[in-house]
Image (cartoon, rainbow, N blue to C red; front, side):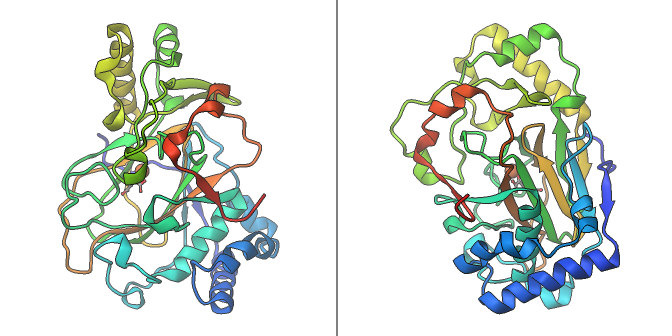
Length: 330
Ligand SMILES: O=C(O)CCC(=O)C(=O)O
Ligand SMILES: [Fe+2]
């Protein structure tokens, strides 16, 4: 896996940084908490005050990399306080950054949350947690977090995934691979366009894992409105139920994704924006510190209204009983 970061960088100038952080601070001051429903309801209105220049920097992904890094925001490590040991103890830690991430998300679409994940919060805290070292969720550390589409099990999954870095003293990389940079034969693409095996809910969704309905097989690849797209989470795909031809094509897809994979080591203040229809992301293994100085990311998920990238058959999926909540009624 390549170790050099090669993601497109969009650098915010000082005025744009001030614009974004002062609006976030004002909203936090007015509403008292980043999880306030009134703050969520106020986001779209508040964003109208942001300049065209800032909007331009935060325009949609515009290269086949399917991602970019927004750089220039400054996180003060001493003000931040210790990295929480678990998402459930994060409370309002780093709340200003929750609001920054919500504003950035709102410029790009509609932030979504899940009842069954991190108490329905719209901004998740991604921290390594004792006892979770080897699971395939954001709370793990000692294992490779296998490249995946975020919330691949669900038809209402995000179009965009945003990761904002609070702290990353050991330069632990997020990995990302774009389907648009892979080379696959037409035969492999046809194979993987067939709905053969389901993608099951991941370990972050205990309720969904208890859902009684029959899992629906879904295609791995599909034609989006602007090119080839994917829905991929091998750690939660019962591939042994697939026929040999499908399995072989899936293996070649995995090889190609590994070939084009980039490693992006986020710096505090960086916001990584990933197109969840084009790019699968993961994380390299690391040794957690568990001393309050661990790596800490904030994560938001965004739907882009009007985007037509998903197969029509997704409309009849049950989504394992999980519902995505939108930050405001559209
Ligand atoms: O820790 C990372 O860099 C990414 C973790 C991840 O997959 C996620 O937060 O969705
Ligand atoms: Fe993820």
